Length: 216
Image (cartoon, rainbow, N blue to C red; front, side, top):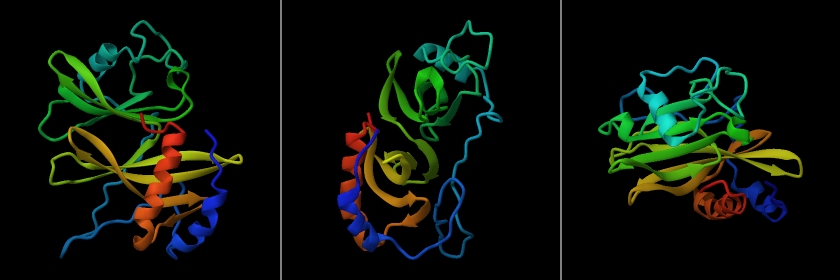
């Protein structure tokens, strides 16, 4: 998962806004609506404190063969139990029951994969069908008129043994989530991309994500 970004560096110097606010994990701008408090839809997942809300989650994991129902230990992510220690569910939308559609965040290391993954499923007939797959972490959901929340997903990129993160926006269209752009690039210090450069930078970052197989 390596991609040289040298040819983009001069452009990076131009496109970042002068916002020096930093956080340990992510930088997300709280969005304001008229006469209302800031809207904070950021998501932080600590799998150690994560819990399932019903038996449905376990049954879905078994259906997808993502866990080992016979596993007796929660300490082997390469053979994970059907446990909230390794998996977190989010509804696909407000109307669809969880059993028929959901977003699934999977802890890094599960089944031998080194990164967090986000999978999106919807049931067609009797079968669950994967709509999207991302090798990244879900860090925000934003309400959308479509009924399917916009997603902000954080992707890592190993550049000369230094990790850079891209916080990228995905929007529901034509029955799946589609890439829109990236709002923040985090190279030690998170920087918001200036509005006038967000489309052009979005194209370049999408090339990186595709080359690194971060979207599948």
